[in-house]
Image (cartoon, rainbow, N blue to C red; front, side):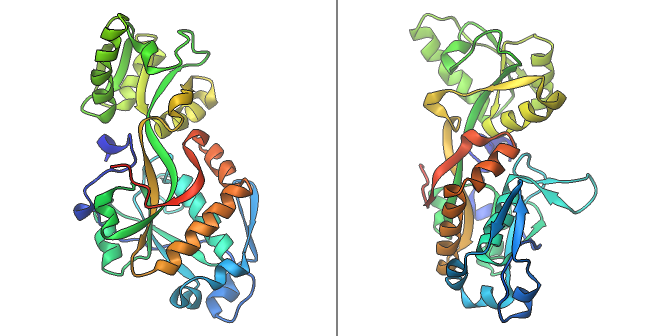
Length: 318
């Protein structure tokens, strides 16, 4: 999974399977017992999200009756999905919060349960789950069996020490400098490929320093042994926000690649048997984008740059 993180979790659709269930959401009355138990509103990332009755009415009958959307997710995968406390079941993260906000807007509960990533899509196909929210890359292969509502784009990003003393703004600025990266990743391949551009510009080769783990590369950056670290844009944003309370690192935001280099869309995967649910989720997400709620959620996790301005459907780039 880590190796595919540069563009979301790009694992073969045939292998994708996971089982999951959990709850959280909102509603404003209703006839079913499930709806009666749902709160009239829900606070997510400091924003109060209220039910949209019209959107609720567009949900599949089975979902309205149960008051629950069954959601598959794989935990941990920071900052998308994490446990609040190690060893306990309470969840947090970008996907979890966004799911709660979408559920609140639709007036139902989005039920999350952790499990391994490689079984998610088959579990949806088998009818065990309605939806997956797990930093999943929207690609053509997966689209054959699920539909996607895309909510972010993510690729590779550049992280530097706080203050950016080397004044790095793009990949080209890495030419002639030492750069840390985890071995055998998309980010390593990105740097190797960019060596050609460095040669054309006569900027000198990138001094690629490989490490077994992202955390090892981060230590090299802390110690000023390298000028920058290349890792996934979401991981860079989360690390910059949390390391030393945000005082250790910062992320380079290249205007030409706001979601990261070689970015691909990440989507909410929905069962093809539930087209009304896909439609309702897309409309609910767009409403959260329009009123600024989605922005608050992405900002909470330090990844505002990967948010989309339009909730697209099946926007794979492969």
